[in-house]
Length: 93
Image 1 (cartoon, one colour):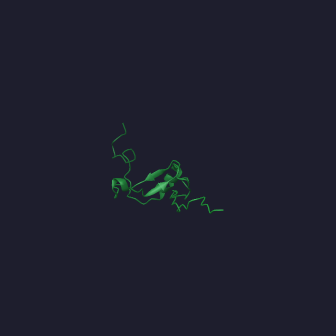
Image 2 (cartoon, helix red, strand yellow):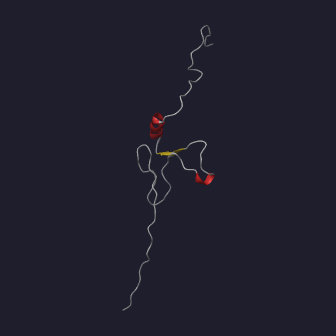
Image 3 (cartoon, helix red, strand yellow):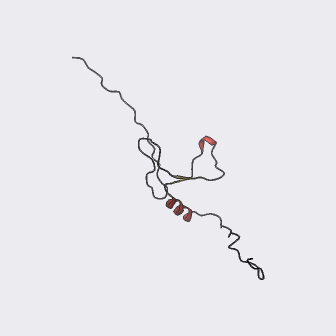
């Protein structure tokens, strides 16, 4: 009776799973299939090369995108033209 090797040793495989940066829910699949629909928020200008651009934030839904945008510090937004106060004597028409 001889010794028979039935299987090969396979080294560990690294699997990256994307998670939402707001709610920490999994976006991708463990087997590496295409991830669920998601949004990538990046900085501009992006400091990476074309092949090396990493998004600053990954969010899973519009609700998480709104929550992220509401809590993000940033420059004061200028009011739009329709929101500005009109000088006295000027009418809207």
